[in-house]
Amino acid sequence: MLTLNAKIAQAETVSAQLVLPYELRENSRLRTALASGEEVAIFMDRGTVLRNNDLLQSDDGRVVQIIAEEEPTYRITCDSTLQLLRCAFHLGNRHTQTQVGDGFLRIVQDSVLKEMLAGLGATVVEENAQFEPESGAYGGGHHHHGENEHSHSHGPLAPIPARQKIHRGMDVNE
Image (cartoon, rainbow, N blue to C red; front, top):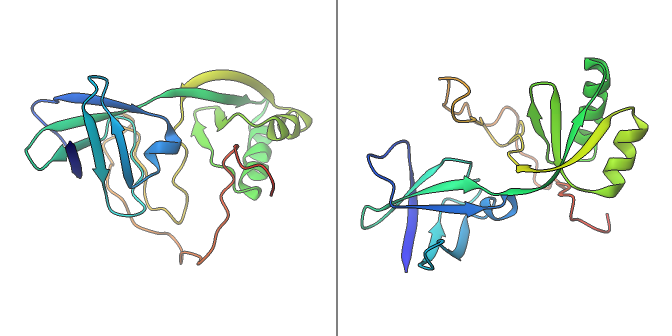
């Protein structure tokens, strides 16, 4: 079994790609398989979130590229910046993991949240897309590959709370 236990910044060659939805990229310990069928174990520091295009290296030197799987999401747009900010506020108030894009928000599909957002005047469109939510103020920096050259983490912006409920769309009874 291939064991991946180090995140690296670059590699001359990539031996395989591993396509995972966000829910699995949140796991610091994971057992899965490459498209070739080869079993893979991922052992990362607790709290590590794998992002699209991250490179993981095994003890034998092989490198595997992480690819964010397209998954059912909602793309949220509004007629004004104020409306979009209001939607972002209400999603944040519910601790909903949210991807922030240029003029849009993206969340995992959730019919209750869709109804709330429509009530706020948003246009909510179902789409299959790579989901890359913000890491948040407590999770340190977050870099979308290719967006800019500023790629290091500044660490937590505030003390990390002992318990924090994160809404993940698939949570049922809150």
